[in-house]
Image 1: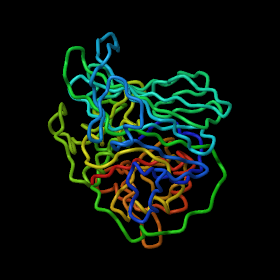
Image 2: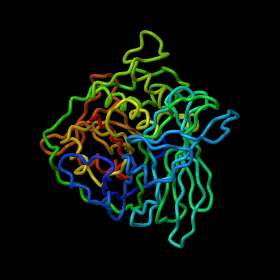
Image 3: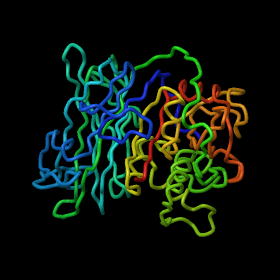
Image 4: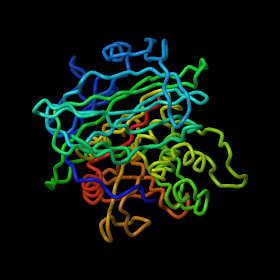
Amino acid sequence: MLRRPAALALALPLLLSGALHAPAGADPAPSSRQRATPQVALASWNTYADLKSGQRKGLKMGRGQVSLKTPKPRTVAGRSYEAGTWTSPWATPGFGATALIPTWEATTPGKTLVRVEVRARAADGTTGTWDTVADWSRTGRPVPRTTYSGQADDLGRVSVDTWFATTAVTSWQVRVTLMRPKGSSLGVSLERVGAVASADASTPRPTSKPGPGVGTVLPVPTYSQMVHSGHYPQWGSGGEAWCSPTSTAMVLGYYGISPTPTGIAAGHVDPVVDHTAKMVFDHGYDGTGNWAFNTAYAATLVAGDSYVTRMRDLREAEDYIAAGVPLIVSVAFGRNQLTGAPISASNGHLLVVVGFEADGDVVVNDPAGATNAEVRRVYDRAEFERIWIAASGGTAYVIRNS
């Protein structure tokens, strides 16, 4: 169930971009398209106007997407491609950000792919170099779906799905390169891209008060990662480590989405979990816990948005539950820190928040349960909120099917 060692502790109020749909009960986004808070800012581009506001090279505008028009030659992994780029406007979070998590939604038929890069600008005006976060495609062929950890340079470095600043930065950009094999006419396109920017803070905070989600439990199906023990160890050590794809499969199943597994041995229970692990596997990280790869895959199947964000507390998560949207969240905990957990400790674990008890305690689908019947759990609100914020700064996958 390991994802990777937990990131720095963060205090992160939720910001919803106008380019993303706010859940029921949330304040409407102002015309500026985003609400700034001191510690977190989520910016996203997905409408015609959003995408038109960026810089395009070799691309054409469509309805809610950009695609290739007059591409230029590009070589990747020794293969010849035709490429075009879309570069976002500068996003200014309104505080000194120390981390960025970019996410995207793209259509990559056949052997096409997209490359996602970020760069930032410091308070003194210094502009950093472009750092490659990922080469991504739905199939991961022929160029493996991969991230590029490292690249420590002037202003930051890449760590799997997250870009960490060397010192706080005041603005950032994301650039996406669309590529298709030379001579082909495959319709690779970009539908949405963005990132959540955040700042470090380790000050403890009181437990949030219950809100509109109390008494609501969403009918999310229960899948255990443990029943897949020994399955396909080439995909990040097999089922014992598949907390993230198992959680993603559960949320997709909640929306009635269960893709036909391909290349999975007959007789495997819940083969959609094995299939999901294959589809989100990150060859650079050598695991299935890449946050952005999970939401990018889900985006190819849902009609709504799919992205990674960070939240200040469980009160903000309740808005999503009240709107019928389960959340996949990233936690970490030691012994005796999470009462009732099916495992004694984890330095990185993903599970699904499916609702809240009447007293505000958290109802989850924890894929670490030994069987499907043991996945549904109820965790103490204070314990759960503490390990969620401390481990990942309130990181959550939001997968919506409109």
